[in-house]
Length: 136
Image 1 (cartoon, helix red, strand yellow):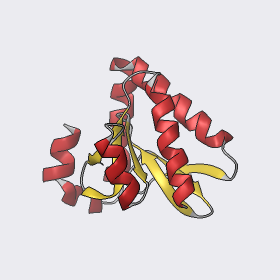
Image 2 (cartoon, helix red, strand yellow):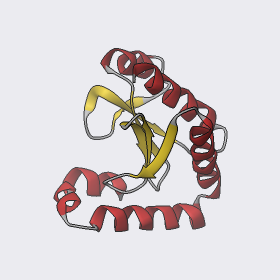
Image 3 (cartoon, helix red, strand yellow):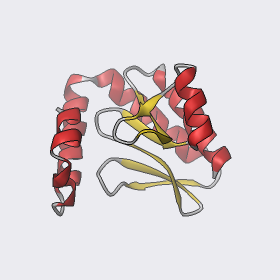
Image 4 (spheres, one colour):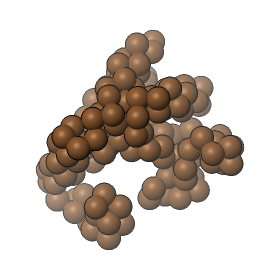
């Protein structure tokens, strides 16, 4: 459903409040149906908050945004999808190594996407945020 909405109904992102509502529904579904994913998401948020200077906020399209010095490092959607800005060169390397995927909307760009499914995935997510901090 997420991929369908983001690819074919992306115009809904301009409807005030819709992205936040949609992400809240994704998070509720994750909390009920995908508890291991939710545990990974909670671990990433806690880990990010432990990084010096990193704060969290609500992303404009819903989900949790990770911010350092006023710059978005990345954001995590309610379904466990983490999008991180790592720079174009690092993005190509991470995709080539199989540690991330091209961004789910932008494709090959300075952004990568990573699907969290289990608590073990939190470590990789934190590594990706670390790469983003290195690029900041």
